[in-house]
Image (cartoon, rainbow, N blue to C red; front, top):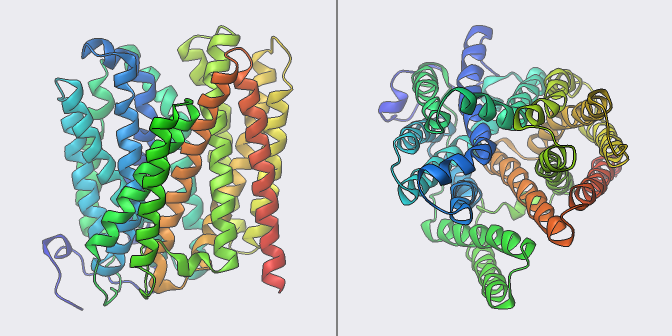
Length: 463
């Protein structure tokens, strides 16, 4: 074994065909804490924006940067961290990410002004990116091959439930405490996950190539401008804003593709995207998370504005989706060890599309039961999709490219969610009264397209 840094000195576990059961449970628990916090903080700050803006004496428009800078930092740095994980080890990247995320969370809790909070959120997003960029790749070293679907099911469960319950949890915390506690709660959790991870996370094989800093810089520029372009286009910004962003995005992507053209392990994994199964997994993921993003941004507006529900009631109306994901994700993970990810994902996404259509067809004044069973159907479909799609992602990439595959898992998810959120904003610019319903119909369309893409993997496998 090669010489390790101080973060590696506490472990004697090396990558093989999975870890022993007890070590496996502790390792996945450590990762789950980090992944849960990173996923939760993607959504949890939305609910607190009015309180934060008021206390920091800033405008609602300016406070949106508290959300945007976190998402930008994550999307822009996911692939560089995934590439770094292949070179220095996934364990090390995840542990440093946990450490940065925890310290940045403390910085968020202690922030005294909008600029200080935005800087802390930027650092928090970078730490979250390191966690999310390599966590899926680490699962290959934690679980034996025959149980890998269960590992993906657990990972999918943590991500989906954290994202789904974020608004509800934020509402509950804000009902008894001030907004800094939304971030302070991460500190003891992050410290626990870090020290546990030092003990139990396995050391994985490393690639021999070096990280290209210029390629990483081009990647940051390309994806940052892409997300900014999505948001500004959704808000119908003028051509003087959109044109420079379009040109800048195109230039940075061109520089990125040219720079890594002959690299054996490109940071933007074009070599993997050329594989039909991997490409279809990317399409499936982006479309599905666009559908989720559309629904999760539009529905709270519909429940509160159109139906007159309170913030607490709105949070609980979103809960059936999360509950059914929690039930279905482990089941789908176990099934994906025995059945085709394309078929399982396609079935789940067809159910999601049906659930979203049923939400679009709700009566004018639906009861709690009429809302809840529709949300539950969506949760069943979404929960049935995630673990099989992760299996499809990672199974279509060679082990030595596991970091890049893991990075694309998170990148496609965030691009999908950003696309969904941008489309909701566009729907509301078209009509403040019917925008939420329009967003749900677009979400159903995305889910149907994702279902077709997932089923198409069956055709590709047979060729």
